[in-house]
Image 1 (cartoon, one colour):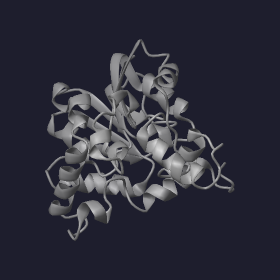
Image 2 (cartoon, rainbow, N blue to C red):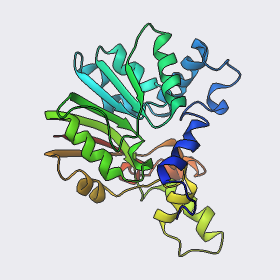
Image 3 (tube, one colour):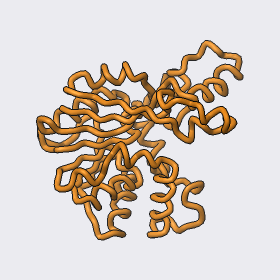
Image 4 (cartoon, rainbow, N blue to C red):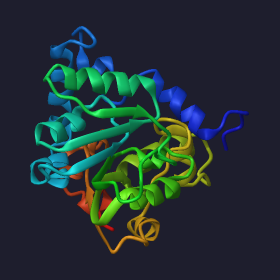
Length: 258
């Protein structure tokens, strides 16, 4: 599907190096990049649009634990973990995200062990972390199953993973299928193909709940928490979208136990 000599992860990295997730001008407006006000705008927008992050992540319940975040982005969630008193480590595929997240924490006098790393192979010992967190990142990898195996490897026995991956049977995917398949006269294109080629970086994946249970089969427990998002509701009349059940959600929150 990729059609170039670059690996998929190289293409994904090039896409996100241009602009870490959540830092577009639509979010930050005219505020100076890297300023405290710029970061505050990013944080305010994120938790207004995705307030459910707090209920799924439960940042304040893990004080004193050793945390790895996979895919730190602008560092907004990473800031919450640091504020909550965790021993924070973070990795990202891009230099742009590492620099942005480091700057975010610095404004608040906080720090973290941050590295640019492909999370299909992370440089930490077995059983090093109490908690691994990854919000909306794993599905961009060439091999999500490798990242999930690494998460399990670096967690202590009984350690927890918290995160989110995309849901395929969602209004957001359906709208993109209408745009890029049905209206293009190609109704045979699958939802998978549309997500791969037209949502965010090339190679994006989205899953059913059953597929996620298979991906996390080596964990002793997995809780899935589908959530209807603003992306799901957009372009639908409010009186229609208010009836969308969460099981259709573009986001599927995850809590797993090793």
